[in-house]
Length: 84
Image (tube, rainbow, N blue to C red; front, side, top):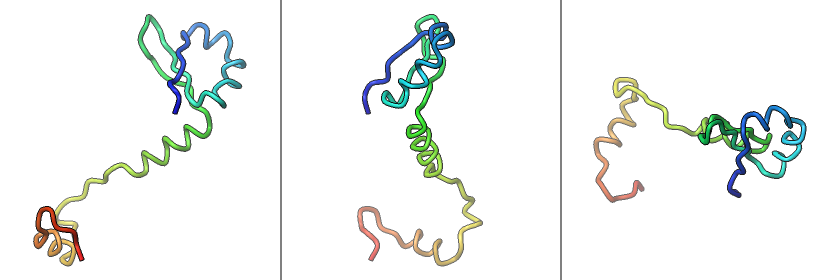
């Protein structure tokens, strides 16, 4: 992905319709205020990519919720060896 270009929050607000078109090719427009990033404007494709990545984030489960077969596989696992 190309480096997102930066635009001030004031310019972004004033020229939103221009940036609405540009984001389709840029993918991401970084919005700044006082030389720091305060947010970003994403194209529909980038938003979909972000949502897909969020779905793949790790889930936390309690050890007590793991079924016996899975727990046995974990307990029998050896570091550096792939499962058959």
